[in-house]
Amino acid sequence: MKSNVLSALLLGGIAFLALHSCRESNITSNTTSSPSAQQTAGPANTLSYVPLAGNSFITRRNSSSNAFITDTQLENWSSTGTVISTYFRVSNSGSLNIGLRAAVPNGSSVIKVSVGNVSQSIRLSGSNYKNYTVKSFNISSPGYVQVDLQGLSKTDRFFANVSDISFSGTAATGKNIFSDTASYYYWSRRGPSCHLYYTIPTNDNISYYYNEVKVPIGQDNIGSYFMVNGFGEGYFGMQVNSASERKIIFSVWSPFSTNDPKKIPPGQQIKLNRAGSNVVTGVFGNEGAGGQSYYPYNWIAGETYKFLLKGEPEGNGNTNYTAWFLPPNTPQWKLIASWKRPKTNTYLTRFHSFLENFNAENGYLGRKVEYKNQWVRTTSGQWIPIASAYFTVDNTYNDQQRIDAIGGITGNSFFLQNGGFFNTIVPPNTSFSIVPPSKAPNINLSTLP
Image 1: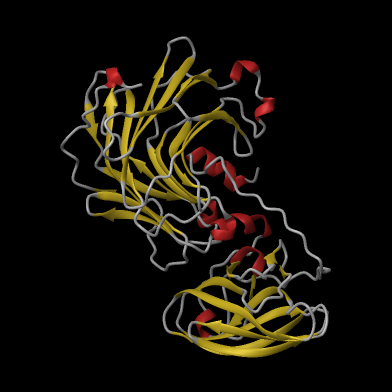
Image 2: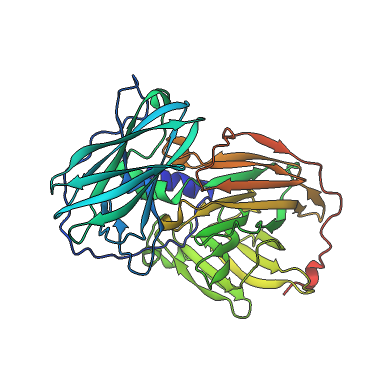
C-alpha cells in the first residue's frame, strides 16, 4: 500500500469499498513517455505538461462512446459525443497558451479544444506522438482551468490517442497545481479526502459518540462516502454506491496490520457480537482489514440522519463497538452491528468525520456534507456538547497533486466539501468553533436494540 494510503488509514480517512473496472482496448497504444510536468513555472514561454492519466475525465459520453483513460493516455476515442475534460490550477490571470501531445493511429482527424466558452479546432495526423499548438486563451482569474476535447471528424476509426495537455503563458508563471506523479494518478482522479477532528472538552473516558448528518441536495454523487462517526479503530457513515444503491456502513479494523483478511490470525480477528435485521456482515481488505457491516438503505439528500456509536472495553483485553442509525420520523433506532475487537482495551477516542470519493471516474464531480449537534457521553453518564473541530486533508492534497477540498461552518453546522475543482482554499489544520448545542440527545440507552 502506498504511503499516502497508510497516512489516510491512520487518520481514518478512507472507505473500505473501492470501485474497480476492467476495460479492453482494440487499438495499439503508443508508449512514448510524456515530457516531465513542471508544477512551478518559470518564464511565460516555459511549457508545463498535464498528464491526462491523472488529471482528466470522460465528462460526457453517449451510447456509442467507448473512450477511456489509461495509466498513460486517452484511448479508444471514436465518438463525437465524447467530451474529455482536463483540469489544472494556475495562480495568475492572463494569457494561457494551450497545446496537446497526441498521435492518430490511422488517418487524420479534426478535434475541438475549448476553455470556457472559447474554442479552437485543430487537425491531427501521424501515428507517432507529437506536440500541437492550439491557441492562446485569456484566463480572467487564478484557479482551476478546464480544457475540453471533443472530436469533430476523422478519416479512420479513432480521433487520437492523447497523453498530455500542455500550457504556458503569463497565467502559468506562478505555481501550477496538477497531478504529476504516476503513483498518485488514481488518487488524484478520486480527489483529495478531507476530515474534521472534533475537540473533546473532557479528559474523562467516553463511551458514546453522537452526530447528525445531512447531505445537501445535489451533493450526493455516486462514489461518495460521508463518514459520520469515526473513532480510533474504525468508522461509521453512509455511501452512494450506484444510481440505485446506498448503504449505511460500519467497519472495525483488526489490530493485525494487513490488507488481506485471510492473513489475520484467529486471535486477532474481529468477531461479530450481533447484527440488525437485513444487515450484511463479513470481512474487508485492501485498505487495512477487519470486520465489515452494511445496511442497504436509500437515504435521501436534504434529510438529516442520526448516528450513535458505543465503545467500551470488556476488561479482559477486548473492546466492543456497537453502531445504531436513526432516520427522520422514525421512533426506533436501527442496530447496524456490534463487533468485538481483540487485543484492545480502550474507550472511544479520536472522534472525527471525513468525506471522500471512492469512484475515480466521478472525481470531477463535487460533494458536500454537513455535520451538526455532536455530543459525547462519558462513562459516568454525562452528555457533553462539541463546539469546535479542525480541518485536515490527505497526502493527495498535502503533496499538491490536487487541492479542491475544504472544511468550514454553515449556520451552526460543520461542513466538508471536495471534488468539482472549485477555487476556494481553506488552509489545512484550520480550526472552527460553533455555539455549543444546548439540548442533549434524548435516547433511552437501555432500550436500544
